[in-house]
Length: 104
Image (cartoon, rainbow, N blue to C red; front, top):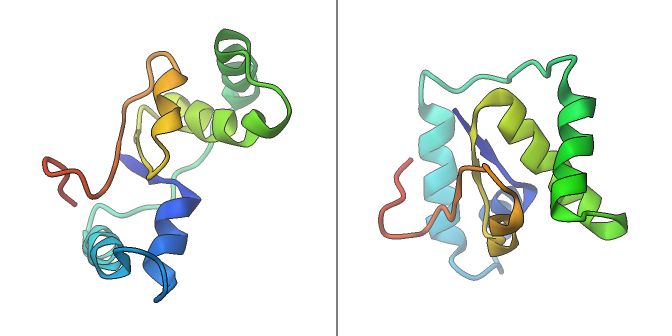
């Protein structure tokens, strides 16, 4: 399962964004997949978020990213993001959608 970060959605939607066409093509391929579903969040998410914030020292403006990381960890999903700052979240599987090895 993959979980796209909002920056991927914004870059795909804005014609003036750098590499918009590549982001849009990636997103369209993902959305066209029969495996594309909206996941249900678990009752554990709040605890996972607290642990992610504690381990990464996430406070204030880093909490929204920690929330995405916690969702991906809780769902055992791979986070797809253009923000390489997600490397600080221990155990998180993530990738940039436009990296050479990245597919839809």
